[in-house]
Picture 1 (cartoon, rainbow, N blue to C red):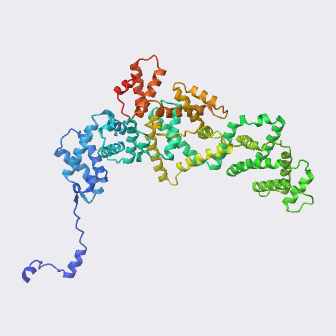
Picture 2 (picture 1 turned 90 degrees about the vertical axis):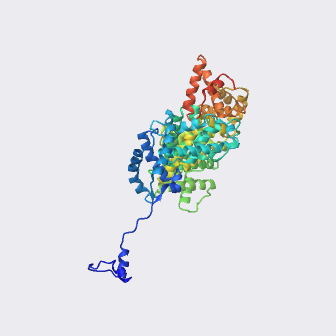
Length: 618
């Protein structure tokens, strides 16, 4: 045995390793390669959305495009695939072994989807990518809840979303968000279901948060102004509006928003103030002189401080006016100067000082010292004396008119405030118009704060701390805008409107007795007749009436079993017949088809269905 063992060694070797040295040498040997796992035995291979499956699908689709989907599997295709895929595959997935059988399975799957897609020209967009809108449209064509009575309609949307996600993953090697695609499908599908109560279809795809509310508001305002805006332009318009609003709110402080809103609102309300008829010309001049004198004190080199100073000065004007009603009319200049000295140096006055005079001086002194730290006593005495003499001359106005003094002050301030861009001005004026329409009995200040709170909400929604958060926000906004824009006015079927506004309570009974779709100006005239408010903007009012009538149409016109789509089509049939009375039925049908194509690009439309509706048959 010893001899046999020894014979395994080379007798001529200059050195023989001892057992200890042999063990030490084995420590320095390169590690043995780990076994590779066949990919078809892994969960990742069977998950169409895994990184492995997406990689293989993307690579193999490139080869399918080269050879064509009708090409049969061959050794050449096999060798070409291995040559192209293996180098990158080994780097990305070093633990897996790529087998021929696995490649063939993916090839067959990609070829199947590729062949299906290329039988429809519209299935690919201008960039050669899958046209998701078309795929949703085709898969929902002929959809009826009767085809799957055991499933909820929303579950059908989920199933279709999963299938389309797998198709996109297989053909493009990209993973779509399942929740986004489900919402997009449901946004089309729910309008094809007859007699579907709005509340019964609530589900995860019908989340309606503050962002949705803002988007829908902008979208309906755009449609009310330009009803035939194509979906793509509508989507882009709303996105641009949101971006402009976001940029404006990010650079504008709450105090700046307050002053802009206050000046716009005051300018709007100024022509209808009672002071125009209740005060004489001389009294109005004295009042304006007093306001201008106070507003002159708001000038400062610090722009941000100037904004705060304007707001504070308007409040100061109101306080001074209230004090003026209690100031003695016969208070002499000498007594005033003595009172100023007493308050400034905190000395006891030699004569009896009225409390109203003391309060007035203290208020002025506080303001002047806050505005300028190193102001001299002489300057303070001069400023307080000038203000006191002006205040003494103020007309004895009713306290109820104090609000009008605030409006007049902000109106006077307008010329000192930097102007805004046209779009920024439009945002503020539109929101103010909504407040005035919905809450016409609000005071100036209540209207102001109600509108300001709306912008505070927008500012919070559209502002994020990091670039990553901002990117995610806009990705979500893009999806939301698309989902709402493909519904056009049909979304009114699922919207809740405040039924207690003057607009709603006045016009709904009027519309129930007539359907003035062709002439909304009649509705405008009727509302103004019932609510003669000169503070309302005609343009904004007309826009709101149009939006409200859309809501009325989808909820009160037609039969209960109508789908949202049928209500949409009936609206446009009536509109087309009204505006093109001399055209033939076929021409009307072509116009209707074109409108459906541009306004509802994801909704399946049957020409036969259009013909039935055009003929007035159900």
